[in-house]
Image (cartoon, rainbow, N blue to C red; front, top):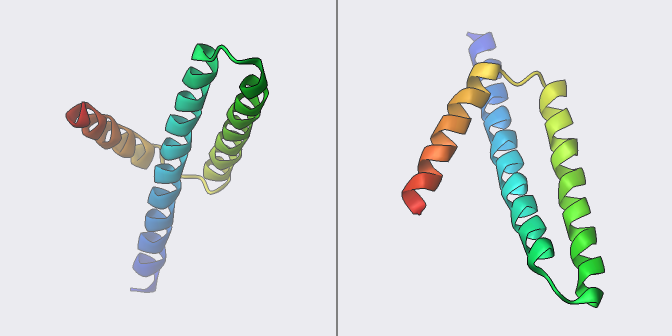
Length: 90
């Protein structure tokens, strides 16, 4: 009775963390793509800092997921669902 509520709360928070991780990963990929396509020198430094910030945030969130011991099955389910949703948006 009491364990179920705690477990469902953990699963909910883990799902939110996974959503954030994937969102940051996508932002990082977009920032990296912009940096690679950029031709201006002044904006390169700003964009490079943005890419490094996004990569650092992704690493931090990834470590948090490992610390929280997010279920591998939950990660797999989320990844499949996320990738299917992205395909439908294209």
